[in-house]
Length: 113
Image 1 (cartoon, helix red, strand yellow):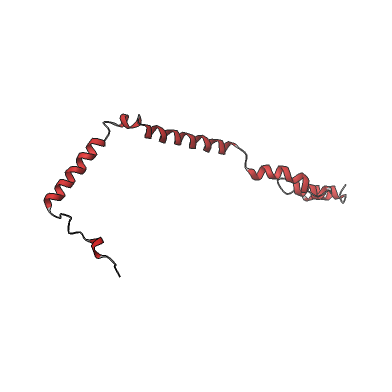
Image 2: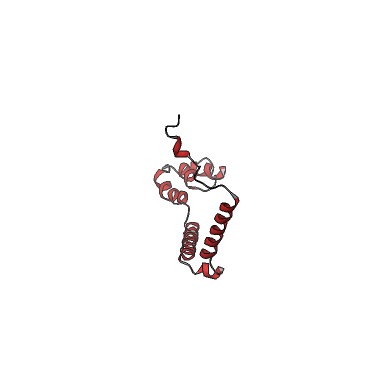
């Protein structure tokens, strides 16, 4: 239930064509005063300079991020020698980028000479 209906009273607002036309004229005049003369005038404003500087910093950070190696590759290089098995077959499986040939594994085990 609304406690105070006078809070929502709109009877003081003029709702006729003349008041709305005057309101539109005030808005148009305000926009015309604050509007820049040209695009060049806007580009020289402090707001545009801050926007351009922010975009340049974001672009440089993006390029720097693209140039650094992925963290997964760095972690693999650091942890693989520590966690790989001590035998030759296990080390071959753990440190290789691709699975080794079966013949190579059998030679390391000593089954093929």
